[in-house]
Every structure is written in structure tokens, then in C-alpha cells.
Amino acid sequence: MSEAKKIAVVTGAGTGVGRAASLALMNTGFTVVLVGRRPDMLEETAKLGPAGKSLCVTADMTKPDSIAALFDKVKATYGRLDVLFNNAGMGAPPVNFEDLSLEQWQAVVNTNLTGPFLCTQHAFRIMKDQSPRGGRIINNGSISAHAPRPFSAAYTSTKHAITGLTKASNLDGRMYDIAVGQVDIGNAATPMTDRMVNGPGVLQPDGTSKQEPRMDAKAVGDAVAYMAGLPLDANVLTMTVMATKMPFVGRG
Image 1 (tube, rainbow, N blue to C red):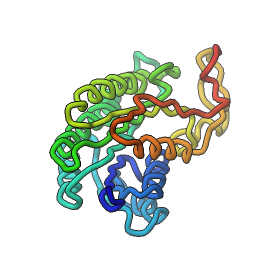
Image 2 (cartoon, rainbow, N blue to C red):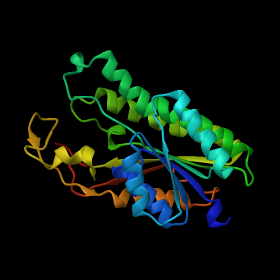
Image 3 (tube, rainbow, N blue to C red):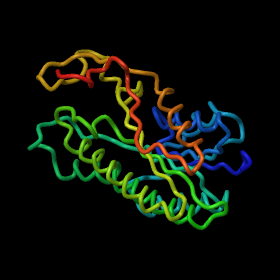
């Protein structure tokens, strides 16, 4: 397949892991559709990559019509889709479990779970009917899918659910040559994790707070590009990419 025909969609491409993955994909030959709510941040990502290897599309992952319009544009522009990275996500305020409002819960579920579900459905429809058939979907999981942080019920629940979505869609995608995998990320250096290294740091399970080591988000971007570059008869179902010294492996 020629480089011009390798089309990827990255949601949440304006910052952090989404930007790192977009740049890694562009640098390995993909044309990347950069998706997010802030056009200025998408344009900044585009300027950091090779010229002519990206398309900025403003979309809101909480709005089904916006998601549908995104994939309509991808199909109309390129006629195919090879890789989808479901990356956009958010967390709820770190409040006591019983004080988390239904609205806060639903906002996280809509962004972290329903959005990727809808994106995956649209990707399936394109991938199963194109020629060559098939493609790859990569979901942004989290170490929270294995072990939660305090006061993270909404985020942790959605990341456990993403693991279920990854496995179920991978199984259902077999008949269409669609491979689905998940990258579980721990302490990538992004604006979302700045709190880990500022002030007292982040709350630990024993009630103390501490600063935690982080890793360059480029490590995650490179992992996504590796997964994306595999032939469709091979799949990374789950990969954990984490800061080596973060307090995850072992008891606190």
C-alpha cells in the first residue's frame, strides 16, 4: 500500500498523547486526520509534522452527529481509513465517591466510552467495505484499567469498560480483517498529568500525597505507531507503556 493511502484518525490530537501519536504516525508515513474541539491546537499539531500529511477536523466526541460528520468527511476526502486511535478522554473532579454528581459521571462516560464506541462503529463501516479490506483500531486505555487511583470512580470505570470494548470489537472485527488493540498508559508527561509534579503531587492510596515520575509522551506515540504499522494478521491486544519509576508495580 502506498504511503498516500495510509489514512489514520486520531481523536484528541491537539495536545498530549494525541499530539505525540499523531506526529509519530505522520513520521512513519500516515496521513493523519487530527480531531479535537480546539482548531488552534490542531493546527499547532499539524505544523509540527511533515507538510501535507494531516487534515484538521473540529469535532466533539460527546455529540453523535459531530462524530458522524467526522467520518463522513474522512470517507469523502480519502475514500478509506486504515487506523483509528480513540484517544480523547477526560476525568471527573477528585471528590469523595458519594459526592460525584450524575452529571459529572455521565460527562466522563460520554467522552471516554460512548465516544470511542461510536467512532469504532463508524470505522467498522468504512473498513469492512473498502479495498484492501480491513484496518486497525487502537484504544487509549490506562493503568487505571488495572488499578485505580483514589476518587477516580468515573475514569476508572470507563477505562475498565474500554478493555471490554477492545476485546469485543476485536472479536467482532475478525470477519472484516479489523484488528483492535489497547495501549494502557501510566504517567505520560501531558497537561493532564502536570499535577503529578507540581506542589504536593497526587493523592496516594494510603492518604498521603507525593510527586510521581513521568515519561515523555513520545514513548506512547511511538508505541501507537508500532501497533499501527503491524500487518493485519498480527495484533497487539494490550500494551502497557508507563514511567519506569512510577508507584504502580508493588504495594504502597
